[in-house]
Figure 1: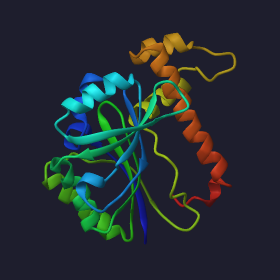
Figure 2 (figure 1 turned 60 degrees about the vertical axis):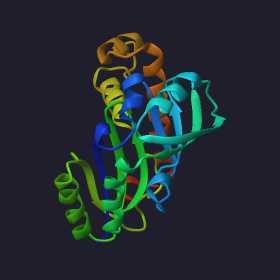
Figure 3 (figure 1 turned 135 degrees about the vertical axis):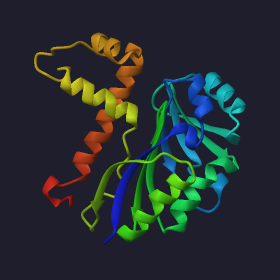
Length: 224
């Protein structure tokens, strides 16, 4: 049975850890995924949470990045689209996934973690992939696994770990209650991030969740 899984990998096991070390509030959304060579995997990414000057300075000094090219600015002032080329150190994760016929559906990154959503044509191939990655020194944390059929959404963008943390805290601490039990400022203090960063993080997370709901006719159609 075809399987869809989501797992987290520490950023230092993959790429861009040095960039996030300098810009801890940075967020990455992958715009395009290609599988025809290590330097062209995840080439187009949206970066938010830093100025263009700060981002380019961090990318220049990041040893996991072989090159980058600025493409355009997004709808918001702090959103930038870049084409990135990565070094050979990032190849371990991707080559193992592709060797087991895995497909990367989408990916996102925050200060500590890369989150990948993958499709495997058979459960046994997924079962082979994870131990192989762990034998190679990567730390893999599976957060979701389901059987896939034609009704399972294969295009939805993944929330980053930071976005999941923010929206969960907002829900549990009463930010979404009516009336609210917690202000945005207090929630930002609780999460130890800036008011502006939290506002952008919640807005992006809500946009992803809204798009999932709009594109998905019924929750009962999803196979768990």
